Structures are given as structure tokens and as C-alpha cells.
Image (cartoon, rainbow, N blue to C red; front, top):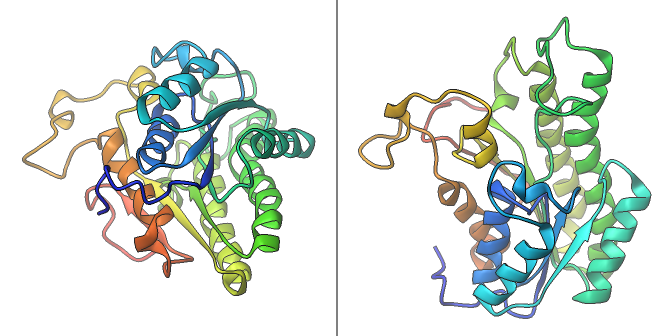
Length: 273
């Protein structure tokens, strides 16, 4: 893996969606450590405070800029809406320049009214929640990647990283629509990778298992023995263990890797998919 003191992404611009907290913030910090200028996207200015991982999106962008000595900007928008996506891209490029790297992290198993859908199974989940989960995860991925890819195609360069989930590879009673949405993200990533091959644009998907973000820990009970960090792979991932993979997909070592889905779950799923 490339050392953090090697600023191999200096001069490049990365848009990281859902970057106010959790994995999104970790992805943004990882790319900033490699020298990239960062557009920190969120849906709400106060989103970072919702699970105790910060204060405001503006503050997160400023902290990343100070810590890693890169340019940053904060962009707000609902990525299920094409007009918001266009504005997010325009604001990013106005502040930082053309987007070289997109990490589309925004998503989550979130109901129309917030929180987790209840019920959240394959049969009884409410129609409004079905639409909300599909839009937040699958539709936002398609629309955001489409919009960013067009500019990358014109410049004939770029990297796109989408966020899937191990939920995509196994039938499940609970969180079913989220699993379906992430399965769609997985296959859309492959389709996009196929189309963008002639343009020298690599497109890949990160599929994490359970990861100890603020939202994960704040929305369920977690067995203490799964919170260890060494001695076993049968545990919950640290945020950095997932975030460091974006370093590979976005950096020089990933130049000829495209159309791949990498599960980061300590071997919790050991089958093709």
C-alpha cells in the first residue's frame, strides 16, 4: 500500500459524497493524506453531529484542509435529485477544479421519515420506505456517477469508487430492500466499468461488512467480543480497515483494476458473488 507521506494524488480533485462522518469522512481523510483536494459532500449541514462524530459539514471540510494541507470545499445536496447533483458538481469544480476521483459513499438503510424502516423485511416494509431506500442507495449512485462520468469521459481520465455492502450477496429477511439496492449498485458498477474502459476510467465497488462507525454503533447492540481489533478476523471492522481500500482503487496501484467488487469483511463471506 502507498505510504501516507507519499502525496501521490497531489493536484487531483476528489468528490466524496456522504463525507461528513463515518466511512465517508474516513475516505475523504485518506485521499487528503495522499494530497488530493477534497469536496466534502453532505445532505445536511449538521449531519456530522447526528451520531456524535463532529459538528457541521463546514467544520469537517475545514478540519480536513488544515490537517492534511489540501484545499477543501463543502457542498450540500440531495443526490436523489438531478438538479442538486449538477449544482454539487458545479460548486466542486468552481472551488477546486475538474473532478478526478469520485467516491460515492452516500446511502444507508434509512426510512422515508428517518431512522431504520420499521418493518424492514421483504414483505411488510412500507412503500414509502421501499422508495426511500432504493432512491438513497441505487438511484443516487446511478445519477451521481452519470453526471461525474460525463466530465471524466471528455477529459479521458478518472476514477470512480461506489459503495456496496456484503448485504448484496446473500438473501436476508431483514434489511431486504437495502440488500436489493446494494446488489443493484454492485451490478451498475460493473456496467459502468465496461462502458468507461475506452476512456481510461477505472470503476470499482467497495463492499464493507459491519464497520464500527458512529451510526452503526448507535443503532444496534454490539457484542463486546466483536469489538476487539486484533487476534481474530471474526470481528467488526475499524473504519480505517475499510477506508484504506480507497487508497488502492483511487491511487496508482489501481490503474489497471476496474469492474471489481471487493468485500471487506474479514472473510465473513467466502463465496463468489
